[in-house]
Amino acid sequence: MRARPRDFIYTTDDLFFATTTYLHPNDRILSFLRYIPDINGDRSLNSKKYVKVDSKKAYDFLGTKYPDYLFDCDITGVQMMGVPAEKVKKILRPTERLKEIIESEGRNQLLDKVVKLADTFHDHTGLSYEKMGVSGSILPGLYKQNASDIDFVIYGLKNHRQVMESFAEIKENNGVLEAVGEDYWQRLYKKRIVDSSLSYDEFRWYETRKHNRGLIDGTLFDILQTRDWDEISGTYGQTRYSPMGTVELECTVTDAIAAYDNPAVYKVEDVTILSGPEVPIKEVASYTHTYSGQAVEGERIVARGKLEKVMNETISYRLIVGTTRESVGEYIKLKDLRIT
Image (cartoon, rainbow, N blue to C red):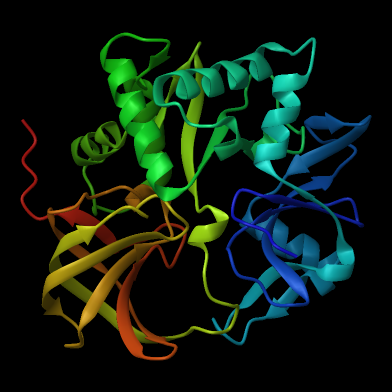
């Protein structure tokens, strides 16, 4: 079974999981529990109530009721979630959901905005609707019409960059899509930054220039990046990782085309190790949204995180940011950022 990030998995136990990676073992799809049945839930589907769960509740719920969705990963060395192959009832794909919404009649206001967003990007870039999709709560139909955001997916690394560039032009010219306001950035900063890694002014500067988040008729949307099928290579277990402590470095970004992928990836050169093991690092990667799209090609950055040895046919090294949810003491920043 093939599944990509932004896909959802509906299971035989009436659970909804979000796929977390591109490569999977033969016996399960690596994914994270998102929605569970709950008679007091705040969202409905087919006359049943569901609730969204956070990380702690997800692990507690599975550990108590469905331990077969948990397994000890021999690659990462930690307990992970994954839907066993025999438990997969349906793979929900963002492209199919968008097509369904476009073709449906009598849409509500939120779904009308999804179509309007797709039409806007198609008209401005010429990108096929087949390279677009909608994920998040809208994918399984567990959204709240007046409260849910739109997780809009673009397939193909270059397609994603093209759409973001288009959005930058649209909002600058007072088009149908708007920039996010100050109140939102303040709320997001309080949610994401729990240490002094980034000041509020720095955080807002980075987020504003990314052009991956905006408003359509008052509803927040994210432009998410997922690889096209021909951009995915390798097999599960082919590459293994070994932790090597903490490292801080300075380097130049040479390739940021996958800076919004999962994980976000920056190819780097001219690396200077500021602290930590002196090894040849070729890549900086981030598992937290805060540091996705943080730098572009040619920029000099400083980064701090966990050092990993990457082992496949050869051995290489990478720096990982976002090894914990809060990413305390881990960051990617421009070396000489000056905010005026």
